[in-house]
Image 1 (cartoon, helix red, strand yellow):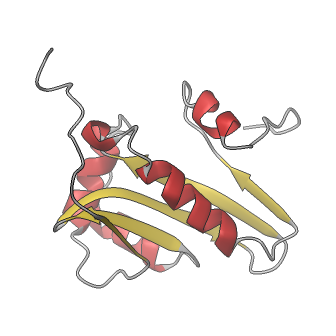
Image 2 (cartoon, rainbow, N blue to C red):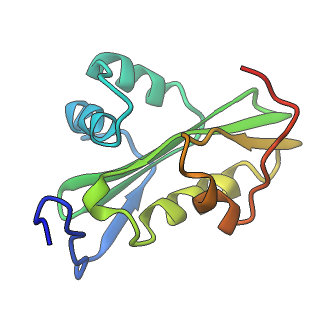
Length: 137
């Protein structure tokens, strides 16, 4: 097995937090790059997360391994965006946990949506999400 593609065995605890304190924004930019979303400037990533109503960060020891946040209007519409987990930590429940916590945060909203990158539909569908057929981009 190629060691670069091997899934890390997560024997240690994953710590989830909502706090942006002590976040290494360069590490977060690297997560987005690692999942294939291209280059994101650390300063812009910091501002986008600081301006989001709800966010989650997943750490193993002191390593940032997963993130997620929302964009919303405060009452009616909430949108889950930027859910990403380092590839070597995927398939260990980290993304599911972040998604679950963000869903819980958005329960008071009338409508909750999310954006999935191509190829990740099955992840969201197995967690109860339904593909919308009336959205445009």
